[in-house]
Amino acid sequence: MNDPVLVRSVAEDDYPAWKTLWDGYNTFYGRHGDTALPAAVTAMTWSRFFDAYEPVHALVAERGGALVGLAHFLFHRSTTQIGPSCYLQDLFTTAAARGQGVGRALIEAVYRRAQTAGAPRVYWQTQETNTAAMKLYDKVADRSGFVVYRKML
Image (tube, rainbow, N blue to C red; front, side):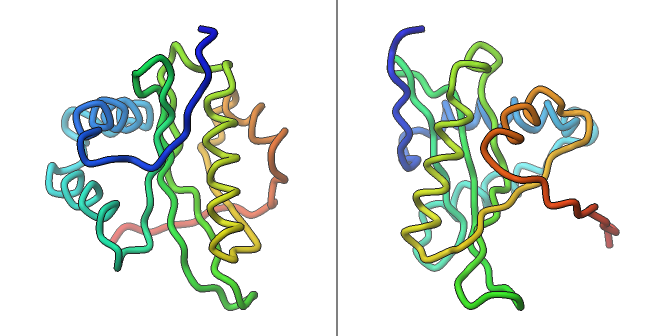
């Protein structure tokens, strides 16, 4: 497509298109069927984007009047810096939009939001098997060398 990509804050009337992207993102990471996120989690996630007291934010990428990508990010405190850290938690584009600059545009928009908020760092993680996305990530950021551990409680 030759239409430019517009990255903007999500709006309340974007819900149906955002939900389609959100479902695609969760399916990509294996959260579907028996392992799907509960509807209450999706509802809370959506509501947080519009709550001024929440540090969670959402951007969407629009091309030709259709949403083709999303980015969710949040700000949090750190013990190693004074300014907030910005964690890019979710990044997703439609299959048709991949390789067309949509992911890069979303990441760069998160960078701008983080700078405005006084965050000296944006970071994220991805699965080791997400090699297509990692080709982009290697161009727009540095690998930290950290390994993520977690335990579900």
